[in-house]
Length: 357
Image (tube, rainbow, N blue to C red; front, side, top):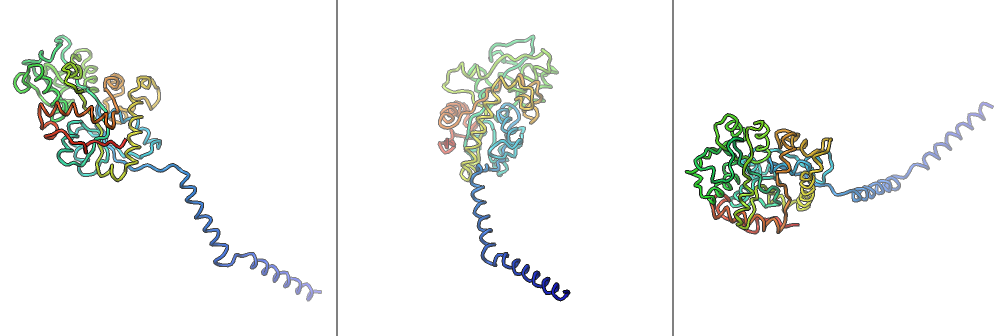
């Protein structure tokens, strides 16, 4: 009996091994077939997903020129934009120019005259969009109102924006109103903080500031300082066939050539951001996407309270393509006639304009 059981166990084990070996795929047959199936499925899954955007190094200026980008930055941080933006909020145009020149920035908001100057100097950028019209105001003591630029004769005017649009716009408008900017008005150039101190301490008779800095000064003065003259209104009154066009967005030409889809995606996302920031209804939102909260959080405006009042005065636009070219050329023509150095010596040629849209 024991011998019989032993024989049966041996037979059972042998059969089990044979069945097991028979179920194992032969090398070079079934296993490669499974691998090929897995490989063939991967591209199908990838192609079904939306194309990923590019990594874009973006620079915006604090102040009105940067306001329109705030929602774009918010969406990028939330992972809801096509491109992914690594962004820098700059305090002056020179910082932006340096970043564009050395390749640190791919796309940047900058003053329109600085954009023309950089193009005439290097040819390394193109104009993507106009984003800000006139935002400059003349402010003064509440008890010393003025109505006309001519009233500044013999006064001390503190101002920001030396070497950029504010200086050239002011000089042009003073000249058009019969004043010599060098002799008839004592213009003292400084930072927004320096202008604020001069006004609040009575060192300046009047000042010129853009919003939201102008808005912040009025609030800080608690009624002692008022806004009197809009330089946009003064410019329009001349009927010279142009608009006071202060802010724009540019792209490095090499980046645009190598990443045309990323540039197109940016323009779509930027236009949507401008529309969102300019919509008065959004200022009533109580969440983190309130435009005033966004610009304060990103350091574009000094505070949410200031931004609430300033954003409606920022003259936000998003003008692209041939309309952009036609709009800005009139402004460049005026600046060039007044002082060619203000735009780098000449009106930019057609290669300056990104007309991909």
